[in-house]
Length: 302
Ligand code: ZN
Image 1 (tube, protein in one colour):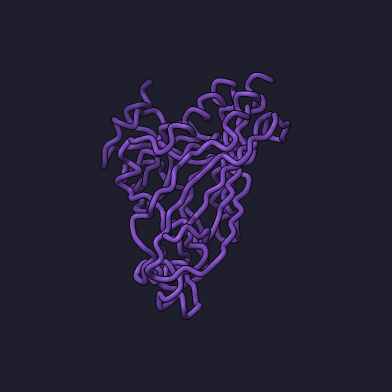
Image 2 (cartoon, protein in one colour):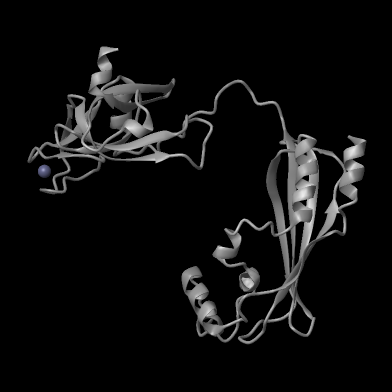
C-alpha cells in the first residue's frame, strides 16, 4: 500500500473547488427564515440584520438545479476517490467538522468559497477498518478577499473490516406499559386487538384510554388475521442491515376494523394493490422479537 499512500500524498494542497461566488449576497429574508426554522432567539438574527455564524455554508450553497445537473463539481476529488476505491477504501465516515468564524456577516456581504485538500493521513488502523483520514479546508472570503470563515472537514475512507456472519437484529420496539402486552402476544403468534372493557370499542395502536368513552379498563380480543391492504409504500432507502429490500410497509385494515402497520411477505412489491385481501403470517425475527406480517390470501395454497 506504500504506492497508494504516495499517490494520495500528491493530492495534498490540490484545489478541489476554485474560488466560487455564492448565488446570492447575505440577505435579511434568508437570515430571518433560517433563524425562524432553527429557533434562534437573538434579536439581531431574528430581524435579519446579522447572519448567525452557523449560516456560513448557506451563502455559497449551490442551487438544487446545479446539484442535480450531473456536472462534476470537482473532478480532482473524483480522481482522489477513485484511487481510494481501487485500493479497497470504499467506505466513508465523517469524523469531524471544525469551523472558525472571523467576523459577523451582514446583508450585502457577498461570499466566495474555495476548497483544497489540506491533509491526507498515512494508512491508519481504526475500529472501523484500515483507512486514510482526509482533511479538506473550505475558505470563505468576502469581496475584498478577507477571510471571514473556514471549515475543516475530516472524513475517514476505509476498507470495511470483515463483517461478522451474524445478521444485524431488527430494531427493538420501544416497549412501555401501554404496548408491552401486544408484543408479548406476538411472541406467541397471537395478533391481539385492544378492546375497551366499558364500551367495547376496539383500538390500535394500543393506548391507556378509550377514545370513545375515556375508560381506562380494557381487555383484548384475538384478531382473525384476515384483512386487506389499506395503503402501502415500498421502501428502497435508507437500507438497514436487518431488512431485505425492497421492503413493503403496509397499513393493513383488519376485518375487525382496526389498522396496523406491518411488512408484507410472499409477494413482489410491484404486485401489491390497494384493497388486496391478505392474511396473517409471522416474522420470527429473533428470540426476543416476533412481528405480524401479511401475505396475499391466495399464497396459502403454495
Ligand atoms: Zn370505551
